[in-house]
Image 1 (cartoon, one colour):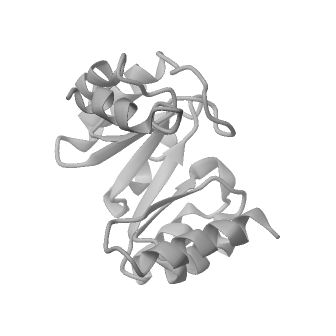
Image 2 (image 1 turned 90 degrees about the vertical axis):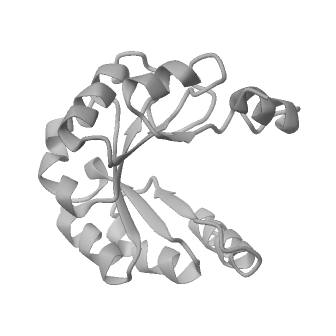
Length: 171
């Protein structure tokens, strides 16, 4: 069974039980082939990697046409300039703070400057998401750099999920 098919089934199966916002991060080549399927399954927002498509405008338009939120992700080595011309069409930009592919990596500290740079360009009313290596130890610092949407995978999904969430929330 194809991995993407499983992910689509998960979204579709839990969509009927909640109206929570489903932010789907497509870490795949040629995301335009899958955007409509994920929206149909129940995704509210779609993030795709600028490095994974030859036509970012088409991807954004496909997402927006369906009334969903569009976001572009940048890998750690991709400069902010790669996404600047799309900012006015986007609802969010995701800065990867690890190299995409697997969980448990350490936060790449040099991405802090990219977060600050992007915040200066977008202003305060734009969502900047970070994903990778986020933990209770660096969360405050990451927020201070300008990120306001945080993904915490390995920091949450471990042997003590409840304790990990409380630690991240500072409670």
